[in-house]
Structures are given as structure tokens and as C-alpha cells.
Length: 225
Length: 315
Image 1: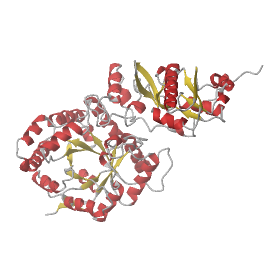
Image 2 (image 1 turned 90 degrees about the horizontal axis):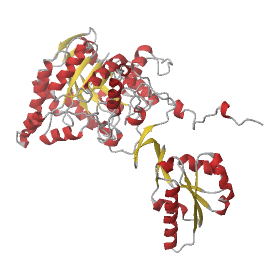
Image 3 (image 1 turned 135 degrees about the vertical axis):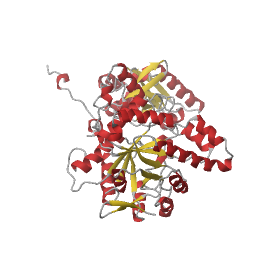
Image 4 (image 1 turned 180 degrees about the vertical axis):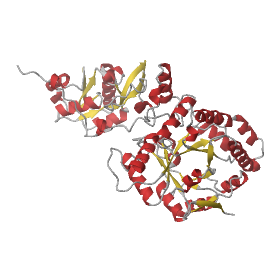
């Protein structure tokens, strides 16, 4: 999932301050999974903002709506029917969702209610961990299914550094050293020889070489009828 | 040619020391420290924003040392510069007469006074070693483009025999050697037993024949420093008996005891097969280096005759 956390309510209130008619848009995908911007969280934030407005004696109109996937054009197109009733939209989508809505409805201010964090895994109830950087050239095969670019604090491809102690990372003793994990997994599969290889510098052009990346798949294009 | 390399080539025990640039633009601060080391060691490591604290740049401080006729070892960390900046600094270093480089990953930015900095880590330390080697021996930068003139650098890397897991430490040292390391400076040795275990493993693999191992030592200033290093400094291994020993002497005599422990450590290390020299890191205590190397029987340092490539001792 792409994880996110809600911004502090004061920051959100500062952003919506100039507007009296506001639409909150939640997203039913990743940010619902990480309990930051799903239907429930959108309803809670909307009522908190309504209550705050009331306390200040403001007559704001604050409505909410949750779409299934805010980052997919087909899912946000129907907002066209109601969006002009509002002066601003407060999006509880991830950064991709916010920008998708902004792109489609360029005449309406779209404000972000969340801080987008990382690509990660729901490890337990209320517990998410980062484990993918989206580097564009997956190397998990070489490292026993553990990504050192994301999980080693120094992104070492030829680790571990000298700070690994008792299996923990020097940066945060709560966090396991990614290279200790890699070492243990490769040992278990008798594949320690993979660690003897000198991995060359990463090709970061696959991540940031030509600005924002895009994927265009010929086989996925709309067929003419 | 690197003086450090020539001393090692001649089979002499080499001695290096460490010198940290100041948190300011004062050239005298580094020169004062360097003067204390002059004649006591063969080359002086100049740290690169160690513990991720902003200091005078290592390259500039090395240049100041050169102006005093001293031989620096340029420490370079991959934390703050990408591959473009690193390769550019390597060319510049060689151009101004620096002859030794130590390639490091660097203390993580979260430890220093700029915890909000972006950690670069475009290359890792092993890739940096390989990059310097290719620049020197193939005359190419990363990607294969040719240089008009190759940098001439004696290439060093670090090893921490005390970090875990031990087996990976040996694999990684072998990688550093294959990448092109000519010499290795180790983490400070206090735990001689663990160090011996690591030495036996690397000697068993023939690695001590392929690279010059300089064992790192740091004199303890006080029991408080010993406990701090044990508890707070990443990758440091100080056994309880060392702590107890320094705690056992009155505060006013702890520095003396620290030097004594350091001298004894060097003497024990001298008996270990495969050690080619010592790296004395007297942190903010450069005055101690002269006494340590003298009492450890490492003085006088060989003086090299540049013309005939012979060496004699300065008495």
C-alpha cells in the first residue's frame, strides 16, 4: 500500500480558512487500508471541521464523498456533477490522488489533507513498514527478498556497514539491520555466494533520469470500435 | 608516490594518525594538530565531516597539510556527494598532490548537527574504492569515458572486525580488496580476542597477503569516555575488563592509564601475524600520539630518500 497520515488539524484549518463551501474527498484504496483517508476517516475529519467552524460561528458548508480510487481518472470523473457547488476540495487521497483530482478539475483549488509517506506493507493492525522505493530495477533476487535500498539506512548494495551490532541498525536500534536479514536469508538458502559479488553503482536514471516516470503500454490502449 | 605505500612496500610497520578539521574556517586549528603529529607518523588521515557534523572540508584541510610538507590521507564519505562530485573531488585531490585516499560510507546524517539533511549514498564505499581504482588504473570514470590524466592515489578502505555478523565482515573485506583497496584501516581495537579471531579468519583466506592491514587504536581519556564509546558510538566494542581497568585508577590518572592501555594494545597487535601497521586515532588529543608511538617502539619513523628510493632513519 501507499501509506499516508493525516496532517495536523490546525494545518488543515489554515488551508481551508478562505473557503466557506468545501468538499472532502476520501479514497477507498491504499489510504483506506492505512486508516488515513478512507470513508470513515473522511467522515470523522468532516465532522471535526464542521464542529470547529460552528464553534467559531462560521456558516461553512462542509460535505464529504469517498471515491474508490482517487488516482484513477475513471473513478473521479463523476465528481464533475457536484464539484462546481464548492469553492475548494480537501482531498484525503495520497499525493497521486490529490494531483489526479487537480489535473482533472483545474479550476477548483485542491488541498491535501494527508502527508503521503511510503510504499509499504501492513504488517499488523495499525502497523505499516516501508519496504519499496520504486527504483525501477528490482534487485530483490540478489538480496534474498529484502531490499537494501529501502531498508538499509545507507542504501548499501554491498553492505553491511560497520555500524551493525547485534543484528540492529546503528541509526535506530529498534530496526533490524537489513544486511543482517539478507545475510541470514541467503545463508538459509545456501546462497551466500551472492554476497561475494560486487554490485555496481545503481542506475538511478531508471528512477529519476528524465523527470516523472510514465508507463505507456501499447497492448493496453483503448480499442477503436 | 605515496610515502605510506613506499613504507609498506619496504616491509616496514607503517603508522598513521587521524586529524579532525575544525568547526570553523581557521587554518591554524588544523595546522596546530598536524604539527603535533609531524615526524611521529607517516601519513595523517583527515576526516570528512566525521559524525556528520559540519566541519572544514577534508580536501581543503589536506591541502593545508600539504603546505606544511605533511602527507595526508584524504577521507571521503559517500554520504554527502553523488558520483559526479566524488569523482570530481578525486581528480582535484590528485591534482593538488594528495596521494592517499580512504573510502568510507560515513556516519549516518541522523547522528550529526544536520539531521534533516538528505543522505546521498549514490555509491557505497566498495563502489567508491572500485571507482577510484578504475580512474587510476584504467584512466576512466564511471561509464567508461577516458580521463586526460589519471589520478595517482593509494587506495584505502575501512574494516570493522567488531560489527556483526563476523562471517559477513570477512566476505566484505574480500570484496573491498577485489574492488581495489591497497590498505585497510580498522575500527579501534580494544577487544583483542575478537580482533585475533577476525585476523585468523582473514589470514586463513589469504587476505592479509593481498592488502596491508593497519590496526586502529584510540587512547581512552577517561572512564566516562570509555563508557560513552561503548554505549553510544556505533560499531565500537570495548570489553568490560578495559572499562574496569580505567575505572580503577583515580580521575587525574585516567589519561595516563589510557595511553598505557593503548601502548600495550599495540604491543600485543605487533605479535599478531599479518598486521602491517597502526592507525592511531587520538580524538582531540593529538598530543598523545607522539608518546604512544614512541613507547610502542615505533619511533623514529623511516625517512625516505626521494631520489634513490632508499630509506634511512632520522635520529
